[in-house]
Each structure stands twice: as C-alpha cells, then as structure tokens.
Image 1 (cartoon, rainbow, N blue to C red):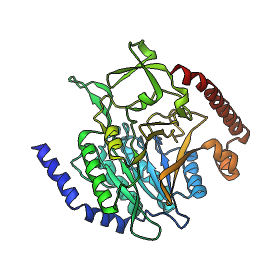
Image 2 (cartoon, rainbow, N blue to C red; image 1 turned 30 degrees about the horizontal axis):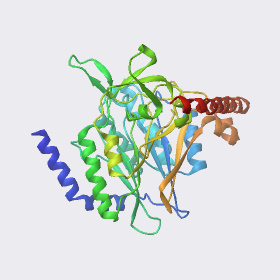
Image 3 (cartoon, rainbow, N blue to C red; image 1 turned 90 degrees about the horizontal axis):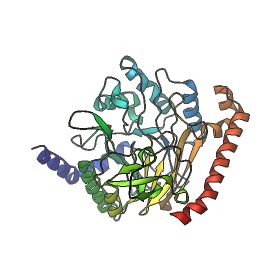
Amino acid sequence: MTKRILSLALALCMVFGAFIFASAEESAVLRFDGNGEFKVLHLCDLQDEYPAAQAMYDYINTVIEVYEPDLIILGGDNTVGEEETKEAAIEELVKPFVDNEVYFTLVFGNHDYQQGYNNDELFEMYKRYGGEYCLAYDAVPELHGTATHNLPVYASDSDDIKFNLWMFDSGTYVQDENGNDIGYDCVTEDQIEWYKKTSDALAQQAGGKVPSLAFQHIIVGEVYDALFAEIPFALGEITREFNGKIYSFFPKLHNFSGFLLEYPCPGVYNYGQFDAMVEQGDVLGIFSGHDHTNDFETEIDGIKIINTPSATQTHYSSPVNNGARLITIKENDTWNFTSEVITYNDLIIDNADFAEKIGASKFEAVLMNILGDFALAITKFAAIFSSIIF
C-alpha cells in the first residue's frame, strides 16, 4: 500500500511538474547575475552548541560580505544545541543569511535530529526563521528523509532554466535486526526514482539535459573506487569494506586533489544513486560534508565527488583547512564549474577586520597555510609513485 501511495505521489509530481517549476520561478530569484555568474557557498558541519562560537558567525558574515554568494547551502549537521535550545540555535544560525538578505537551502545530516526533534520539525523551524530567504521545500513528503528537493537556476535575462541544484537527505544511521547502529544511511530507491523523473521533466521543459550539482551530507560509496585500490583480503583497521569490496589503506594519491585526512564514511548500503546520475548524464558533481577534515576533489565516470570541510569552531576540524567551499558556475559555460575552499586562515590573512574580530594571529594563519601547502606538495610528489603502483 505504501509503495502504491508513493508511486501515485511521484506520478502526480511529474504531472504537475510544470506548475512546480513555475512556482519556483515566481518565488525564488535564483538567476545568473549580470556578470553571468552564479555562486554557491557550501557550509558544512557547523554543529556548534548554543550560543555558537562568535568566530564562526564572524566568519560566515565576512565570507558573505566578501564573496557575495547567490545561494548558501547548509550541508548537514547544522546545529547540535540541546533540546531546550535547539530552536534558538536554528534561529541564530539563519540570522546571518536573513540579515545579509541571502537565500539559503539545506540538507540534513546524521546529527541534526539528535536533540529532541525530528527533521520534519526542524525543517519547519528553518522555514519559520528563514522566512522568504529559506528556499528549501519537501518535493515529495513521502520520500525517505526530509526536504529532498531541487532548485532551478534561471538565465540572467530570461525565464529559461540554465542550471539545477539537487538537495538529497542522505539519512542518519542504519540499524541491524536488534536495533543496533551498523553504519550510516544513504540516498534510497524512492529518492533516486524521484531524481530520475524530475531530471527528465526538467530536460523536457528546458529542451535538453540541464547541467546540475548535487548536495547531500553523507558521501557516495563510489568515492572508494576513486580513492583507494581494491585488494583481495581484509587487514583489520588498515582496510575498509564497502559494496562487497575491500580497499587498501594507501590512497591513490594521483587521483585526487586537496586534503584527504580521514577515511570517507559513506553509507552501509548502495541503492544505485551514483549509477543513476551517470546514466542521466546531467550531474557534474556531488558535494558532501560529514568527514570534517577532508576537502578533496576526485572524479569517476565523469562525475566529480567533492568533500567540503567543516566550518565549525567547536567540534573536530583541521586547523589547516577549516572553512567553507565557494562554487562558481558561468552562464556561458554551464557544463563546467569551479570551486575553492575558503579557510579561516585565508580570511585572517586577507581581511584584517576579520582577524581583529576573532582575535587571530596573521602569523599563525600564514604558518598553517605554509604547512598545508608543504603537505600538498609532498602528496603531489608521492602521487608520481602512486600512479605507477595503481
């Protein structure tokens, strides 16, 4: 019965797809700007207590002021306030977006719900305090998770759809038959089916495939095929197992850029999300948070898999790459995009006002950048041998 209801909901979503897109067009002002650019700020794993560290809000406000993003995407594990302060934490979190009049949307992570509210209730709080600047919605409420949706980006001078942004709730934890957590969740079959049908509807309306980016908290399992070599046997803690495969500890250093400072943590299961996106041929990159100290970029089967580091000032993060990711799309080249990590250190070095606000040392920030650059240089050198081995 549940499957029938879901199938009917998906069918109705497609039948009334034109109305959905028209409604989004009227309410959202996601357009390429006069310079033909659209910029997304990806903020992940803020998960600060309430009240949050002022340095984090100074960072968010400064990044918005300097880089002027068109949209902010909260990448999950957005707040971790106690139950009695959870609503206040959400109000505090979205205040910089509202004050700066910047539109935002969000996906949920594996920790958002753990302070006394489920994600449906939290979603209502984001909409309440974000007001007109919160563009998140629940495309089909019957889908797994909360607020899986998409946001079209329109041409600078017309109502033509030029680009699309997918937001997926990748879930929380998976339990065994005894109710014990056995690992992380992932995007499920019903969400994948919704994606394929919505992708087809967008292509029909736009007159061709619409290039897009996807955002979710938990990374896709295919990242292991890109980053690590498969081996025939397990070696305890120095190997990882996903999708029925065993992967070596040593990464394919030649096959990624940026920092890989911890094992990626995808879901226990894989329902074919990545394969569906390869088949559809419209997703250019999949962005995730979750693994706080990673900011790598790799590619497999024509899709970039990109991790954004944590922007928190409280929970674990790296002093080298703590920050957010800025993504830029050009209207005259929508099948390509660029992205860069804007670290706290970068802002401390480049923005004296920010450094003064948070009481940071420019010397220490420069030192951290030098250490980071040195580590990346060593990685590039070692990648020569990695390419031979793998």
